[in-house]
Image (cartoon, rainbow, N blue to C red; front, side, top):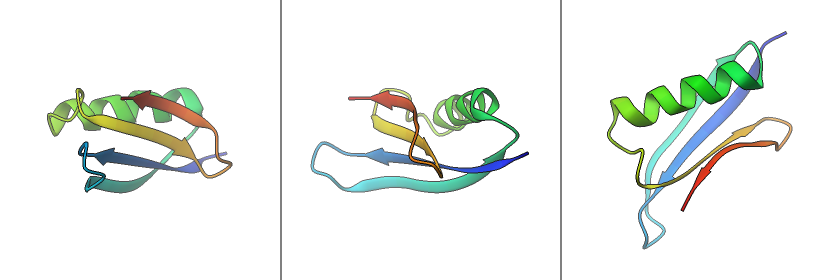
Length: 62
């Protein structure tokens, strides 16, 4: 059963740099996909979070 996940990246000012929804088969795959997206877009060191549609926090960096 796949779910919808949301990856959001912020500047310290609160400005959103990325607000992207994607689907994955489970939380572990969603975490991997989120990390891959961060690396591809060079956002791995920016403030970010990845959440499930149920509100579960999968990735977080400040």
